[in-house]
Length: 599
Image 1 (spheres, one colour):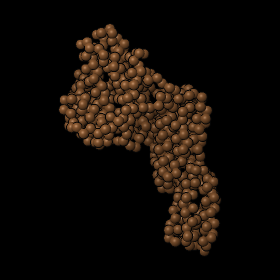
Image 2 (tube, one colour):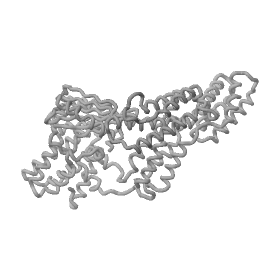
Image 3 (tube, helix red, strand yellow):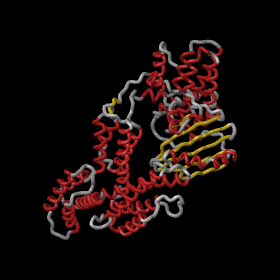
Image 4 (cartoon, one colour):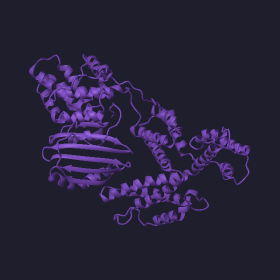
């Protein structure tokens, strides 16, 4: 606990850790400290990593070479010992109370609170201090906006669509009516049709005839056609033809009709026709079908794992499926035939009609092809045809899916008052409030409180605190060196001898979690979790003892039910006995960029 009298001093100490970069960034010319001096080793490696003297790969090699993992004690157990020491003296009761609040029992940890508890471990302290002292918009909303931005940048790197508006939303400091209206405007823009005017095809035909030399179109008539195209694309919505203005201007400015001139016209025709063929209704149907594939898979997984599924939940998804399938059928039938899907029209209609005739979409006995598999067949046909006319159509489908998600997130957060018009985001938070739930901060506070005391118990506590600060910084080193979030388990667990968890975002929207445990009863256990496609979870379990694996198998059905409750599906589960060597598994995680640890 930070007392009022010395709060300013502690604040200065903590802020100096972050703000005084000069010492941290100076390369240390001296040799590495003795292997047994863990504190000096960790500090040296942090300096070398931060200053860029060594690459992350080399830092992690040094961690292994110096046997730092083996020299470290179990942080969770050490914290428990420190708590017991503080409780031996009544004068330390406030300090003991502060520490105890940060160490909940493993039995009290719930899936929805795990992230919050992990954020208290101390590895994020400097990051917390360096961030603006302000509340932020809901995490789910921010995530959707960032995902939309990333896909739009892929669609058009040179002239990204809507990114300016997205950046404005992401940097917002006030959740007022303007913010909500901007969100709604973004949804409208993303849902606008991207097909081109009918006049365009006539103009493209003129250019076609010029290239194929079927007519005697002169240079002036071609320039007139190009000027008309420029006028059309300039007035068009930004997400459509406006992207081609530069190419049209280049052709108009060409001094002569040479090979380069012809090639540019060919490229223009190709680009414009591809854009005109990316039909918004097709994209929307493909996006909605993909969403329903996931909803169906989740329902099927729940039924398979005997999880609770209400008739209302089944009826809702079944109704949505019927509506979207009818929309897909309408797209390929006259009088609203969709040109892109013309070649596959009969196949799509046949599949849709067969699926609609299914007596029960979600039968208790899930034999044969499931509804999710049938829907996926339709999705695959539509997307394969889309790709033929526009290689980026898959990204257009993703944008449509995210636009739907953004719409639902806005409604949900407004209804639950997570977004309230006129709510001020920018709120100054006192340093005490900012750090009262951070382990490293509490340890430094204890060190500050006892630094002037010279009693035997105070000296012993200070030794433990010093060692624990080094251990927290070791996990900071691992996190920085591997571009992950690697931490000890910041809660009390009597059966735990050692334990750490590493979380990392991989490429292609995949997330990886590695949990390394050493239990008193079951020995070493490694758990590998991979989340992909938003809802699918692969699980690999490696353990030294067959007893644990048998226990895991016996309770696997309950685990799958729990995973279903979180809206996830256990895709593959691998259970294997293994001889787990003593090594630092986290150092094998792929590397990335950046020095700030984010919560």
